[in-house]
Image (tube, rainbow over all chains, first blue to last red; front, side, top):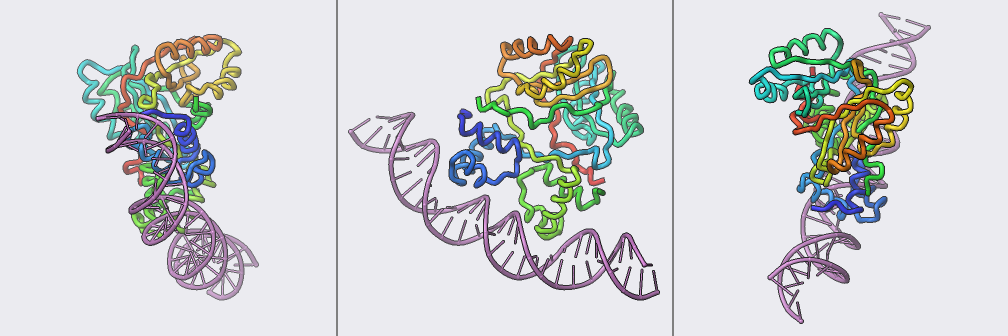
Length: 149
Length: 149
DNA sequence: AGATTTTACCTTTAATTTAAAGGTAATTTA
DNA sequence: TAAATTACCTTTAAATTAAAGGTAAAATCT
């Protein structure tokens, strides 16, 4: 399925705010609301739109600590980890990557105690490196500014 | 502002699908739709809800390459970078972190050529390390499974 | 303690939005 | 060239939202 200019325009709005109504998007891109709904449905079905997520400030909600943790898995421990990681509520995002480390994760924690507990859970799987996030420079939103090619 | 059990329940649904209607959420958590709307509004105002983002499969939309890039900024080049990075459409996410590197970014690119072009843009700011993402193990969604404390 | 304010919900109702159905013109396919 | 498909449209019923006004419980003040 192709993403034409109109679809990029729709995605741009949905990226900006996933709760915009089809009617509102339609007004902006020059389509009727059923037409927008139809296009969105197709992009969902094609897997281009994977979902709609709410961005939560864990900080404001009491989860004060964000960290990036890399994992260099021990022999034979990568697969078990890949299974187990799905259960870790602290893990916001996790990628398998190339390079010296196998895994990179974004985790959200209440405090240092919580971080320590979490790292303890990881040490059976491999060697970890932790980087505390100082601030978020760019947010998901910035992308697509004019990716309408 | 406090996030009580009801609010976590609401956040859980919105996390799962940011386009759920207030009416539907209300049915599930046992509130009227105006009550849900009011609670959501308050969480937005308090900054607990930062926004609603659509998750796009860049892969399916033609952006085949995802990478994690770290940057160790040259003397005096971190600030200019922090300003400039906001303009890079390729950057999905960017954090300032502790450790040997100053910056970690998640970037989305069409192909290797695009990656090369992008890295060229970074080299004036510092030394980079690139990790190609092989697969996404955990998605944003998994979190909050039962963070309703 | 008692009075007052605030909060968190409710219901009702009007305006808006969505979903479904059916139609049409333009493009694609056979 | 004919048939099928596509991408949109309009219309309309059902659902949702937003706004208003009300109430009971909890919190705050005197």
